[in-house]
Structures are given as structure tokens and as C-alpha cells.
Image 1 (cartoon, rainbow over the protein chains, first blue to last red):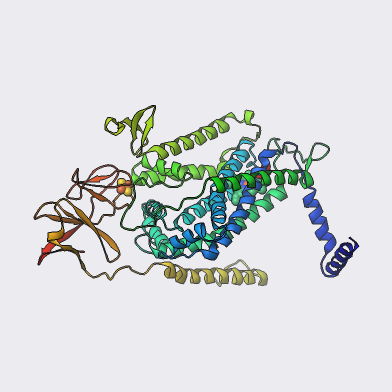
Image 2: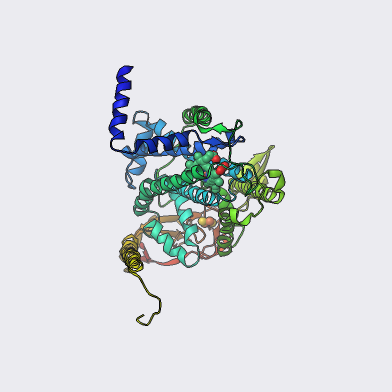
Length: 384
Length: 146
Ligand code: HEM
Ligand code: FES
């Protein structure tokens, strides 16, 4: 015991002779003891869980890189090796793959929470804007990571995705060629996506997250008071960050990790067939979080669709500047909440339509063929 | 500039040199970076041809998928005399179309786009026909000119 204490004293003195330790300790103590507003609840852990998942993606991603090979000849085989031969490789890969899906879910919950509690209003507009950029970067993580196993779905999913980018007027063809590194998905594309996935995006996301968190910390978490009338949390009802909120976070992390590990074990990630540039398989669909946007594009002619589809993300990005109502309580902002909830419902419906489109499904013993637009038609010949 | 009435002091001038220098340096670097990332032309660019094998082994009403110059080609034997070849890259979102023998149409597996034997888009989302290639039987061999 006393050995450790002596060691601590020694290190402190040693550092104290070289650094302004008093200032540093004062800063750490202030940060740790930061009082949080009384309404801070379990819903406020969605952001922390996103951070937790970001850490999971970085650690498991580094481990996957050890055996992964970014070439068309070896990518599929190396992922197969990781899933079947490398000790616990299936577990690492499962954590990374499920982690990406859960991260998107967690971000959506985090966005919903900050939206419903109006935490994006003045002075936290930039926190929101950086958050939206982060969401975009995380989706790009998903899109680039999708190609890396070099399977049929990843190859053709990427073909369709880059083709959509290519149909943007003027810059589209240029952007598509730059993304693909050629005219079609090839080894050049794989190498470009790999570089973006393992180097560029991690730095971008870590940097943006750091700014996001510094902003959140310097401004303090939003209270439920109207803009300009925020009461700085103090007194008996506040929740100290340390240890109260951190404990809450630890509970959530533990439960979450248990759920994630269970998913990895019970719902293994399939690998599917290796990419074949000469055969397009039937029913290629993007990942679920891209599906609503993909389906949305179908209802418009190509050019118009792309123009129209930039509007919803722009509205989300600029939300803090469009919504000028100072109120934070949901009941006092009926218009904003109604529009927001309707937009969420529309997104879910688009996702469902996208999921069923171009598929035949049996509902109560009847066969239905869902067309391109997700509209069901009775299909007597398919009823067999 | 010499008759500019605004006086520039030493500090402002230094700021201008530093920021201007950074901007110039950034712009100068952007050109080689974009050029570096811009893919080299794929394929030789020369008019090439590719063989789809001997005509006698090519059954009427079937199709073959070939690859030439890194590009896919679909060849269909419509009848005893008639062959057709297209770029199978769907004009909608780039999936590869397939020959469907039963309906004698060309279909796209991605969004059920349908093309006829001339490569014309007849139903579904594809906005344009499939680009055709010319095919000829040369000394018993089916040859596609790219
Ligand atoms: C990598 C992605 C992200 C991470 C790691 C992250 C992390 C966090 C954390 C830990 C907090 C504080 C606790 C909480 O409110 O849950 C927070 C607050 C906040 N986040 Fe995020 N976030 C991310 C993405 C986003 C996105 C996509 C948005 C919105 C579009 C967003 C908007 C906000 C806002 C407005 C706050 C302030 C909340 C308040 O003051 O009450 N964040 N973020
Ligand atoms: S890609 Fe062929 S129909 Fe859509």
C-alpha cells in the first residue's frame, strides 16, 4: 500500500516540477464534478454509447486489418480466413459488423433524443451541425466497409451506389470515376475504399467527435428551459458527472456489451458468395440505413430525384437555424415535433417499401408481388 | 496599388504573407493531388474484337457473357443467322442484364428492367437502350467488334 502511495507522491512531485500540475488537477476536478441538469436520464447515454461503439469499431477494426488483404484476389479469402480459421476471428468480425449496425441505431436514437429535447437550439447549433456531419461520415464508413469482403452483394451494391453518385448532373461522372478508380468496380475501387475506410474516415470521425464533445462540455448539457432563459444547473437537484452519470454510463455499457456479444454469437455474420463481375445476383439491396434514401429516389425521374433528395438532409443540417421557436418542451413546439415525427414515420415507411420492393411475399396464404415502387400486386401464378 | 490610400502596417503585411503563402501552397498542391487520384485510362482504347467461340457450339436462343478490355459483353444467338451483341451494363444503375430464353427478352435482375432483342428498353426503370456492338461470323467463329 505504502509503496504505491510513495510512487504516486514521487510521480506527482516529478511531474509538478515540470508541468503546472495545479492547473491540470483543477481542470480535471472541474470536468469530473461538472453538474448536469436534473432531467439528465438514461436517454442521455445514447451519445456515450455512440462513443463506446466508436471505440469498439476502432479496436476491432485494427485487429481485422492484421489478416485482411485489400485485393480482389485475396480480400474474400482473407475475410473467410478471419471468420473460420483465426482464433476468435468470427468474434472480432462479428463485433465489428454488428457494431456498425448498432452504431447507426445508437446515433439515430441520439439524434431523436437531442431533437425531441430541442438540445440543438442556441447556443448549441454547431454541436448539432457537427453531429450531422458525423452521421454522414459514419454512413460513409458503412458504405466503404460494405465493399471490403468482396462478395457478390458488396460488389453489386457498390456498383449501384456509385452509379447513383454518377447520375448527379455535371460533377456526377467525374465523382464516379474518382470513386471507382476506373469505369467499373475493380481492384482500384477496393483499394480506394480501403484507404478511405481505414485511414481517412477514422481521422475525420475522431476529429469531429473531439470537437463535438468539447463543445458539449464547454456549453454544458442543455436544460429544458427556453432559449436565453437557461438556468445553470446548481444546488441539490443537479446530477454530478462523476460518479453519478459515469456510473449510469458504466451500467449501460455493460448491458450493451452483453447484448452485443449475444448477437455476435447467436446471429453470425454470413459471408455469401465471392464477387463475380460477370454475374449480377437477383435482389441486390443496400444496407437498411441507406434503403429509405434509395427507395425515395425511385419515385422521381433520375435528375429530379437527386435534386429533391438533397433537401431532407439539408433541412436536418440546418434545423437549428430554421426552427426559431425558443421553447424546449415538446408540448410547446407542436409544429416542429409534428413535422419531425412525420418525417421519421415517412423514413420508416420508405424503408419498408424499399425492403419489400421487387420481392414476392406470402401474406395470409396469398402471394403478392411488390413492384419497383413497393406497391403490392396479387400474383396468382406465384401463389404456388 | 501604389496610390492605395489604405496604409498597410508591418503586422498586416506579415499576416498577408503568411496566409497568402498558405493559400498559394494549398492551391499548388491541389493540382498534383487531383491529377494523382484521377484514374489512368482503362483499356488500350484501340478498336478491338473478341471471339465468342465457334458458331456451331453456340445454340440458337442462348446467350454468352464475355469479357474484353475489362468490359463485359453479352452475345445472343437470336436465330440461325442472327447474332446480337450489347454492352450488358444496364442503363439504369449499372447491373448486368441477363438473357431470358423463355420470354426471349433481356432482363435486368436489379429492378426488373426489360429490353427487347434490339436492346431497346421496353419496361421498367432503364432510361436508355443497351449500347450495341457489331457481331459477325468470321470463318465459323463468332466475333464481336468493340
Ligand atoms: C460519432 C457520433 C457521435 C458521438 C460519439 C456523439 C457523442 C455525444 C455525447 C457523448 C453527448 C453528450 C451526452 C448525450 O447527449 O447523449 C452528445 C451531445 C450532443 N450531440 Fe452527439 N454524438 C454523435 C453524433 C451526433 C449527431 C449525429 C447529432 C445530431 C445530428 C448529435 C447532436 C448532439 C447534440 C445537439 C448534443 C447536445 C446535447 C445536450 O446539450 O443536451 N450528435 N453527443
Ligand atoms: S439497374 Fe437495371 S433495372 Fe435498375
